[in-house]
Structure formats: structure tokens, C-alpha cells
Length: 100
Image (cartoon, rainbow, N blue to C red; front, top):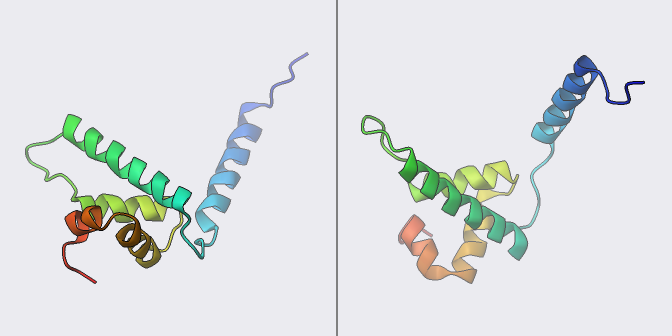
């Protein structure tokens, strides 16, 4: 007796879950935990881009990585920037400079 779901049903379920995750609304607030996850993802992405650097293609900036991580975790970028500025102003300045 085979208890695992068949491949087509599993793939349809995975596709449906992915679609629902993609359509989920953005969060209203940025918690300290959310900011920590974003910063961890930025750090991992920075390391990964360094390891897989391509001479012909420029590496993404820290700003691009930060905003991409916010999008992945469904966080409003402006609120995440504000939370970063409050928590670690020197890191905020290294990513965004003197931008308000």
C-alpha cells in the first residue's frame, strides 16, 4: 500500500501553496525578528554573490539585496528601512547613505 501522495497531486498542491504565498498581502509592521531575518538573508546573499561572482555582471548592491529580502519576506520597504535606522544607524548609513 502506497501512502505517499502521487506526484501530480503533490505538484499541484505545491503550485497552489506557492501561488497563495505569492499573493499574500504585505505585513503592516516590521518586528525585530523580521528585521533580523532580512539582515541574515542580506548577509547570506552577499556571501553567495561573492562566491559566485561573474566578471561580466556587476554584483548587486547592499541596497538591492536589502530590498529584495524585504520583498521575499513580504515587508514594506519603507518601514523596514525605518526599523533598520532605529536599530543600527551605522548599517543603515552603509546601505542607504544619508537618504531619509
